[in-house]
Length: 434
Image (cartoon, rainbow, N blue to C red):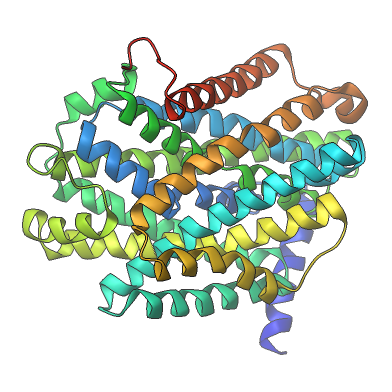
């Protein structure tokens, strides 16, 4: 039996075992693990290098003050990823496909264009982050790190031909590496846990720069492409054949969303906490990934700096592969065709190479790419709210009142933050932030 056949059989076997659980013939903790996968893949978008850039800036400049932004963003992310998964499970269609079917052509093509720009902004952050981690860890030029990242991510994408399970397991392993790295960092960094707790529950935005970073944190946490992707990851993975099976699938999916996004949120908060503990008191100007690495070495030792780079490298490579998967799904859903993976990989890498060759500050490019994502984010959020509350689409699975209110409030928060940032950008005074 060939290796590729073994891998394809892994996905088929997983699908069959899920069917046994849905039929009530299989139970236990190991059975629950069969349903883990879609939210784990989506969660890598919440730990990508864009998060590293915004969280380092937040922690070094403002200490623990902006932890509440990370927590709020993660709670919004949990809700909307669960809605995305529900849409795919209940309808059998992904979010982009439903946008194509339900919206007029002008709106559909506008949404597609903005979503493609968001996908490029996403890949800029992810691809650059992985390359920066490789170049610093192995002392190679950044361009060489970018080339290696391109090859590795393309290799990961080829696994998608072997079914859903191999990619889920690989991404799950990389999520575990990133999480372990930040658990270790928490033992190394001198954390003021009382201040961190206060920063997580007391909202505060000290000035306009903190606002820009906060919007970047939102853009780096609640990711547009992840909202499109999650609905697609669930639609063909042991699809429910009746309402009873769909209800069971939704139950497992909701638990997976809570656990996977809780892990991602903890990692994000750990990034801010580490940056605050290491840099805020004596090095508040540290705002770049490269500077963070070089400053960590004398402050916390070479082990802490290397752990930081390993997590960054794992984050960049895995999230870049997932971003490309999402881009393919967005194009297929909105306009009904796909391009070869190598071509999409090439096109989405180009902005990163342009940034480096032009000499643009890479960390600044990462932060501003997240602001771009924050402006693109309301589009899939609004579409998700409209679709998941529509009984003609969702039937008995349409959102309840509390879910509806939470989803609408989350969307309003994003829209308000974007409006404030636009006022700031064009010099319109904002009371309390002058």
